[in-house]
Length: 133
Image (tube, rainbow, N blue to C red; front, side):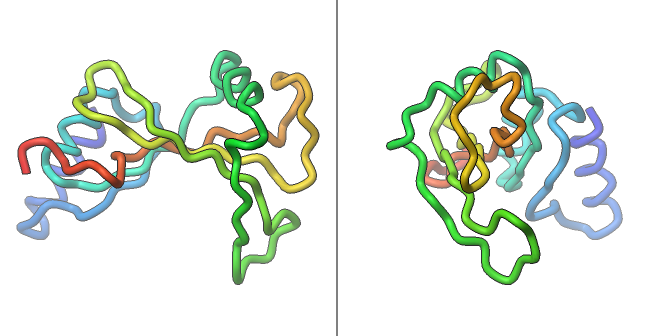
């Protein structure tokens, strides 16, 4: 996949592995994310907004969300609610973190109609050590 080809390219050009990669989830598979994790490469993938995922996020109790304040940004919603949870993925050894956000003031409505619910990304669980390290 493209993410692993980029790692090879980066290593060839710089002599070392990249420390971190940020890319769209369409560019790789969970098995390749596992390979990146085993290499010790931190990553964030931007998630697809499937109806099933949006429904799962929308059904999460309000108490599971925490409010964060975004500093030094010029945006309308500077205090979104964030849902940071550990999940398991097929073909990925170990837990991963899934981060989702809900804009400040957003109503909890039907997820298919609520544009304010946004799956943000996947990353290695920051409390776990990459396999093989």
